[in-house]
Amino acid sequence: MSTTPTQPVTARGRATRRALLDAAEAVFAEFGYEGASVAEITRRAGVAQGTFYVHFADKHAAFLELVHHVNRSVREAGARAIEGVEGRAAQERAGLSAYFEHVSEDPALHSIIRQAEFVDPDAYQDHYRRIAEPYTAGLRRAMEAGEIADDVDPELVAYVLMGIGEFMGMKLVLWEHRLAGDEAFDQLMTFVLRGLGAPEA
Image (spheres, one colour):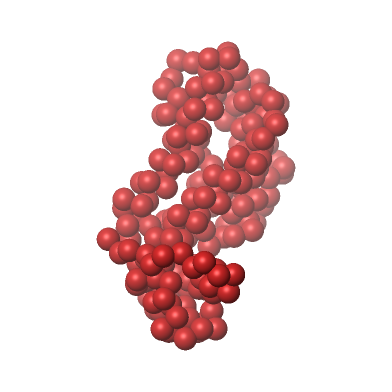
């Protein structure tokens, strides 16, 4: 597996690395991993090709860091969305709404993760595990508190809900350009909450 050089310590270095990652995200989304080139990434970032290798060992290392970035951004957005929200039903609504908004603001993230299934299967599986772990813990607490049905493995429920959120985010947000809060979102939440055995928020 590719390794990544040490993280830059200067503000300029961090800015250059961020510009390279932003360019890489756009290039991977547009051309796919196989079609993406370091030359195109550096052209869009406005830096010399040699600068790329100061920050990344190769194209795969840059892609892998993007997967990690997507994972962090999704988890952080979800955590912010439910902070201070009381009740599992309301948390599910807030979390799914935040995910849809995140996909709307950065559509390329969906493409990066779908490509990761074939580019780096281990990173692809780790992406979902990292999201599922805190999700499972939250569902388990809700089950113990009697907020949702407790006759199903919470980890299984977490993966089911993640699948619903990801596919419906693709359909409603990427394909149909709809946002959380419209009729389709409300219908989706009704379905989810009934499946959880939770009262609607």
